[in-house]
Length: 207
Image (cartoon, rainbow, N blue to C red):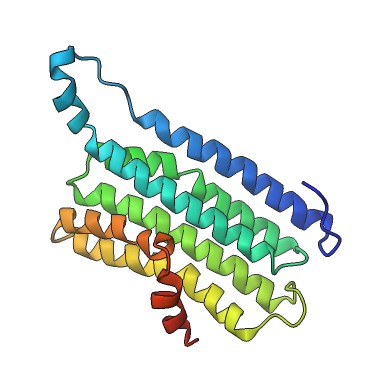
C-alpha cells in the first residue's frame, strides 16, 4: 500500500493487517459448504438441503464486507493511531476471526435458538468494537482536522444499527428462530440496497 503522507506508519500497518485478516476469514467461510457426495438423481434435493449453509454464508460474507468497508472508512477520517487504537483493532479482528465458527454453528442448526444467539452475539460485539474504535479516535483527537459533525454522527449511527438489529434477532430467537433468522438476513440489506443511505441512514442521522 502506498504511504499516505497524512497518516503515520502505525495507522497504515493496522489497515494492512485488517486487509489480510479479512481476506483469510472471507475465504474460510466457503469451507463450510461441501459438495454433496450423492448420485446424480439425488443431487437436486441434496443441493436444496444445503440452503442453511448457503444462507449463513451469504449473510456472513455480506456482513464481513460491510464491516471491512466500515473499518477502512473510519481510517479515511483517522490520521494517527494510539495504544488504545491498536488493542481495539486487535479485539475487532479477533471477533471477526470467530465468524467462520459462528457461521458453521448456525448453518448446522438453523432452527435452534442457541446457535442464533451465538451468531448474533458475535456480530453485535463486532459492531460494538467498531463503534469503540471510532469513539476512541474521536475522544483522543486522532481524527483529521475539521471533520464535519454530520459525518461523525453518521459514522456512529452506522456502527450501532447492526448491533441493534442483531439484539432484536436474539430476543426474537427465544420465541421464533425462523423469524430471527429472517432478521439476521435482513440487517445487511440496510447497508447494501442502493439508495438506502438516503432513505434510511440520512433520515436517522438527521441530515
